[in-house]
Image (cartoon, rainbow, N blue to C red; front, side, top):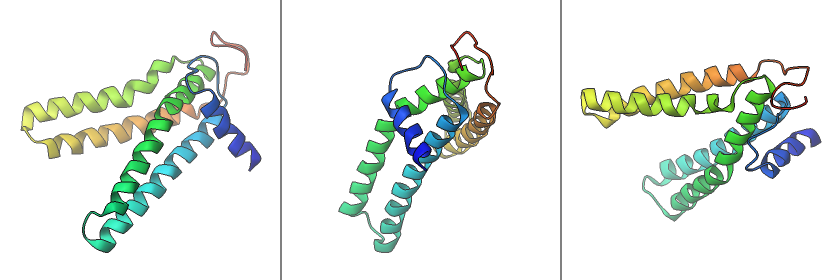
Length: 152
């Protein structure tokens, strides 16, 4: 359990470090923590909304909390993803594939259908598919030897 928190701390300490390499455990532990934080804040926010039927101050607090978690975690999430891709010998810019493809699909479907709802649906599907592809790509075993991004 100590290794789990060490990996999360390491990811936050390397906040703006987009060079070097990250082991698979550091990446997986950070992604688990990132998703857990969003799941808990989102669940509590939805629970309070459903319970009351209206938006209250509590909902605003949860929305602000979710925003703070997102803002504090998005840069380290990209940084650890970059370093993980470096660990398997790939360029870190692969991290932007889900974001770019999602935006492209959103714009194209909005132009075609003039509907934000359809655009959001299609872009969310593409985002999930490309993120799963990138996650699977990140589960590839590390390079055992030094590569152009550094030592293992």
